[in-house]
Structure formats: structure tokens, C-alpha cells
Image (tube, rainbow, N blue to C red; front, side, top):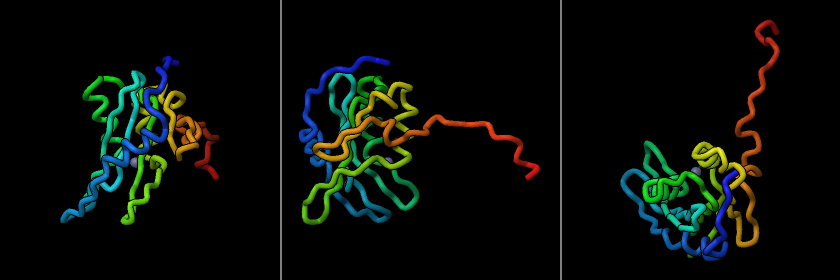
Length: 147
Ligand SMILES: [Zn+2]
């Protein structure tokens, strides 16, 4: 496993950084930037992103933040990830990564499953493996064609 650097930002600061990205815009075919995300590389650098949703496709804020990290640093290791949504009253909700994002992070680097810490609230942070316990589990089954 790759070693990781200490955090330069607290959990609360990362939640705030992700929340600052939110700038909800209703477009002709979807909603953009209603979710913001912050990811921390193993160097301790923070990269941000927003959700981009259209009628035909959606890319989550976590994945746009990770794409920014890769473009800027060529690093595929994600030390920490957080995504937040803000309601119309301005209340901030930390939201867990969707299944697509969980698998995406796991697929980015083989160490991410244990290295990546997922912020679920200001006081709950879990490794990606806790949210994706069977990400790489395949088991050959007995011949089931004759059942
Ligand atoms: Zn997602």
C-alpha cells in the first residue's frame, strides 16, 4: 500500500470547500452544480468538482473533481473524498458517493479501496472498502445450466 500524507485540511474544512462549489443552475436539459465535491490527493492537495446533469447523462461531482486531480497532478490515488448537496434553504448535506463513483474510485488505483477515506459527516469518515466490500469479488459457480 502506498503511504499517505497527513491532512492539510480538517473534515469540516473539506465539507466547506465542497459546499463552496455549489452554484445550482437549471438548464434546458438538466441541473448543473447542485452537488459539489472535494478530493484530496495523497500529496494533500485539494481538487474540486461539481455535478453536471443533463437529460442524456450525468457526471457526479466526485468524478469531475477526480478528473481535475488527474489532469493537474497525474495522481490516481484519492486520499479523501467528500460530496455535498445544498437545499433551497442553504442547509448542507454530506452525501455518500453513488455506486458508480465508488467503483470509479476503486478502479482509478488499486490502493484506493483501502487508502481513500470517504467523509460521510463532520464526524464520520470511513474507508472506501466499507462502502464497497465486494468490489472485486467474483466466484465461479457450479454448472447452473442444468438446473
Ligand atoms: Zn456518483
